[in-house]
Image (tube, rainbow, N blue to C red; front, side):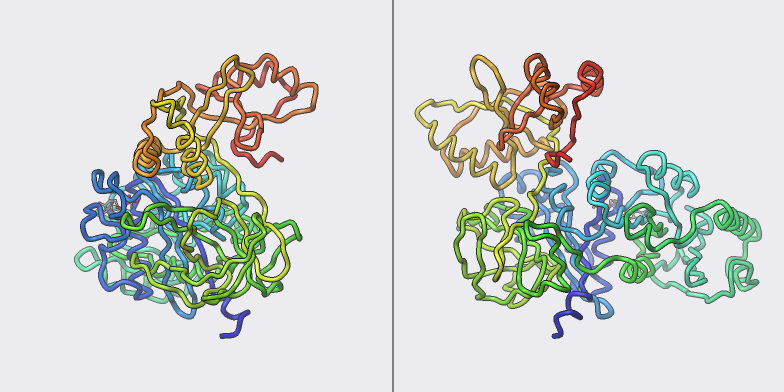
Length: 528
Ligand code: GDP
């Protein structure tokens, strides 16, 4: 296949949402459109028994959740779509954030009855930091939800993003009758008896009498026309450039469970979202359309997918070029050549061997322990992609080994798990006796840590929970930094020796900022 065409056909995105908004449901419907799965219900099973992929770890079996995210791909209308699944429930972790660094755009899925929820807000911030386009799907319109204008206001007030509704709902819950597609001037009718059967009526515009005929409820139609007029007069204009920069989010309304609005969303999404985007490196921007030799970076390492082999899989996002099985590439950090002979890809949960892949695609590499988060693999010219940021943990524990004699295995295990990105390791700064502190984004990671140290390194550990709830990377002019380091409490250093402050709450942080006005605190290790 022509390289440029193959790259331009790729769309790699993540769905960001709060648990229960309907991410699994939406993903299933998208895969169904692409024919990647035969029946719904196979994306993420809450009952794990049928799922080879999520069966790999005891903790998962006990809890019935999947500990790490997966990558799903499907073909639709000439496009090759990769969905990066971001874990949501108790398995929320730094992986969830890191996955977003491998996405070219994001779809924010919101339960229309609940609006913007906590986890969505956190994930949104990471997307915003990267400046990627963000699409919004307001879900569950078949149930009574909040007023769409109120939802738009919430996006603006809570997330600081303006919006452009691509469609507008007619009624909601009991009275939900359909969605008017502003772009195509099309009415999609919702039929509660048979929601899968969607009648599409082409209109001249919102005033077309065909609309009255189709809806049959004068009150609803009048309200719809009023609202649409308000949108046209007071709302933001459609602006593709602002959408591309992530400053305006196009909003879609629908009901994932009945597949209503999903296809319209998909079709608009595919035309508005970017094909694989360039990425900063030590050689400048690597644009996949210009730089045609292979390069990519590791954004996630998943351990023990197969307990019989205790193997690890490193997920690589191809940034440029074409991957071919058996090719030889350079592992830049360690300066060695590797033959990529056994890569896997993830199509609707079944592992299969991939023979070729292009920029935008994700491949899994069997990892005998040679990869770290952020590693660059290249063919030809040697360069490295920008470092992967660390994100503020939310839970902290002091960690010690129970038997002093096992100290070596303990340190080795901690180092491995830190490199895999399962945990962040900090050391107390300027304390009489140095202590190691583990920080995690999701509390389940503590259990993962305990389990893996015991099973893979035969080490028992003691974790003592600390009262902190977030970390901030600190930076400032040298004198301010010196004064800060001398008197601020609860300082630690990260793996690279950067100064990090641990806070129990916002109040503590504001107090510190008042006391040291020249200091700046960052939510992730990308200090600008
Ligand atoms: P996730 O936690 O975000 O992956 O959410 P799920 O896809 O598992 O959905 C959570 C719950 O919401 C399930 O009971 C779904 O059946 C339900 N759900 C998902 N989409 C819709 C929808 O469009 N309408 C209604 N009424 N329920 C939905």
